[in-house]
Length: 343
Image (cartoon, rainbow, N blue to C red; front, top):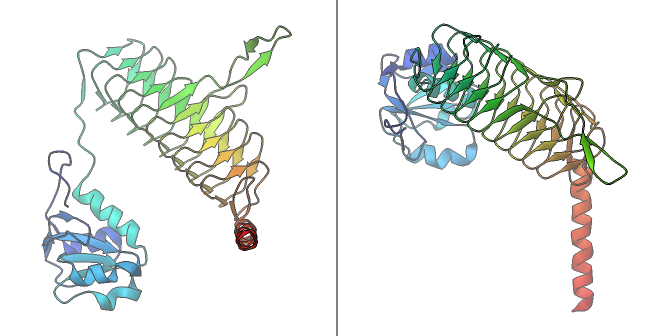
């Protein structure tokens, strides 16, 4: 179904020519034809734009009532008669840009809610919106057009660049962030890392955590994700890195540019993750290991040693994916043999 107008503001209509200009796609159809929104192939109507990036959905394209489709050159011949097309190799990226054109982020209201508590020693950038019951402590610096949601707490001395979004119930401390950073609802950033020294009596003495969290431009941290500050060194998330909901980042972790960590990933302290590495859901990483650039870690894997750049690993302990799947196949065959003997 199309985006519910109760929740998602819309712009438009937009012409096929405008969409082609936005995406760099090659248009096929009447350039002046206009569209009012986006929707999946199965439910899109004549005024809506859809996309196809997998040949498995070619039957759905054939039956679709969409007015236009974003599609790869290899599948362009399958576009039904009367449906416009935007032909590009980057189908999903183009569709994301089109959807963002039709449904941009809501405009900010440049205001501080009367219930917000803002220190007179905080610097709030021009055009910022501070929501109900938000707390902004002394020494905080927010760049222009910041959005601070209801009940968010920004601790003393934190600094954020332009166009940052710190949403409802977020808590932040000990953090320096770049531009266009987004902290989704309930995220916790900058809290004390998990570090302590045992005493002879069997008690624990907390180790002071004296580092910071450094967030590059366009970092996004998902709902209820946690990023511990460093213990001595800083915890660093590089430009464009994205954390899904419920991710845990331990103290002193360094992640490069464009790292993607999917839901429930846990990364122990002092781990280094190279540029554009991907960790799938529920993967766990032991402390003090290095995951190379563009490596990919499969879902529910346990990484206990270094992962070279550019390879896929899977399993617990994680190993090269081909070896892991061969081992699984061998175990399955052994199980089948044992079963046949018992019968």
